[in-house]
View 1 (cartoon, chains in turn green, blue):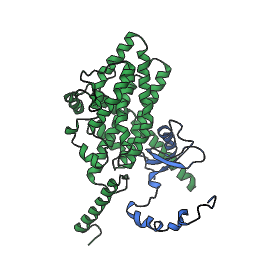
View 2 (cartoon, one colour; view 1 turned 90 degrees about the horizontal axis):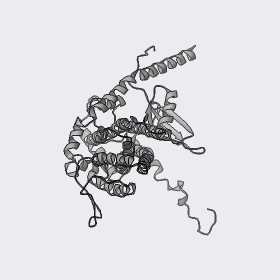
View 3 (cartoon, helix red, strand yellow; view 1 turned 30 degrees about the vertical axis):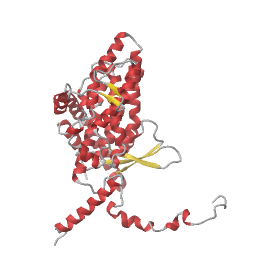
View 4 (tube, helix red, strand yellow; view 1 turned 135 degrees about the vertical axis):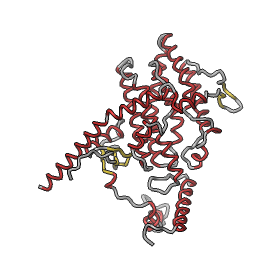
Length: 328
Length: 99
């Protein structure tokens, strides 16, 4: 028997042992680390989720990025620039985590621009007015925080560590957005109308960020069992609504949902149902900006190719020069 | 030795940051860079945007040798039964000060 011919029964025995070790780690609420054995389904689910999360950060730079040059003051420009730079950083933390699962950065970028991996549907909506910068900070980043805080305790170590770094920075994002809206609400009637119009457009898409209802979320149960997700989509959506209602009141805007009201029995807000047909259409690529977002990402990647190649060539030449220098 | 065709992907670096003077460098994550110098610059941009560090180390990931997770038990077991290495192993009367 050669080294490559392992007895299948023996191999199955090892596999069962590894799986028991993995299950025990999850049961202890310990973290799985990159070089641990893990079931293929666990790895695949994580690659899908972390990649989608990374792509969302990178694509998420676009809707707000288009306002950097048009923000009304140097202070607002600096804030927005810092925020968009953070999104790039968040994307990089998450790509690094994803790469520990055995996919390369190049593969991830390809899967994004070829539409084989998804990103959050929210970024397929356009930013039509400057108030949208504030609304995105308040509602979109607020929803993201709701999603991300429990993920700091996710069972995969590198993902959890990336989420901890991200959550520390997201708080700035939400606060700058809310402050921007408060400033506009203290302005003219026209500015107040701009804020309300923006909130009307972003409210429902923000609720959709938590994903389909639990009954129609195919991956939730297994992801919860593996400790990848810590709460269901509906739990997080409810938490977000309950957090946001008093913030809307303090701001002086209305949320565009006639069914939204406090339910004393549940000690939570009742609210209407998002348009799930619209959600599915956007997820499938038919949102207002899907094609534009991907085209822009692909162009940025292609336009940057010469920079990556030049840096690689420079590195190769300096290494070569150093080698020749020492051998002389 | 003269192969200068660009590699498909920049090598991976691990990044360590010293949060402030007096503390160890701590592993914070990883990134891709074409060479060591660029790795330091990228690390500054990615991992220290809010004064998180006063010093950065970067090292090529393929230069790190790690213990194997499968050998975890045999590797670390020898310290498990050496309770006498811990201060609480030694009984000292409660009224003896500064111990």
